[in-house]
Image (cartoon, rainbow, N blue to C red; front, side, top):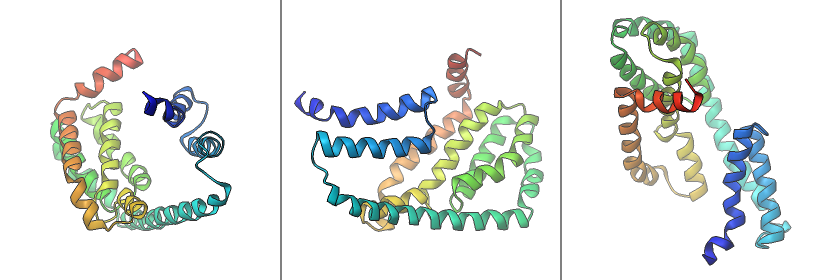
Length: 218
């Protein structure tokens, strides 16, 4: 109980993020700014473990982490440009046409495709390139677009945890000061668990549609 009370101000931080995002008070990017300001105030005036003199070291560390992400994003944008020039989206649409009669099989193929692309491309270009390509096929197969969106985003984000790009892995390596080989070995059980969940969502769409309809009143 003492530990809970001592950490109460820190525990309020994720609640602040959830409240702001759910209520529409601020965006995800603005939430990051608010969290930094909140952490500074709590660290300096309440916990008194943070000193103004430590601020420069924090800024340098944040700049290093951000630079890693930006270099990876730049490389991902180059990959997306190459895919567009090579007319790969149109080729993908043609390849998916034989699976339109089986929604489950189509979703499995799309998940494998997105995961493969996600290993070498960042989330934003993956979404921007593949969504316009895949959505017509999804509608033709009679798959709920909202359900597809949920599965698509989860699979796309899973690509952040897979080599060779692995944006999140690089950030974690930088923060923890460990090499890529060590972190890849450690995350395999979690990747397998996530893959199992995705497979269940593909085989049983009700796992997504029933809660979605409940919360939206559909």
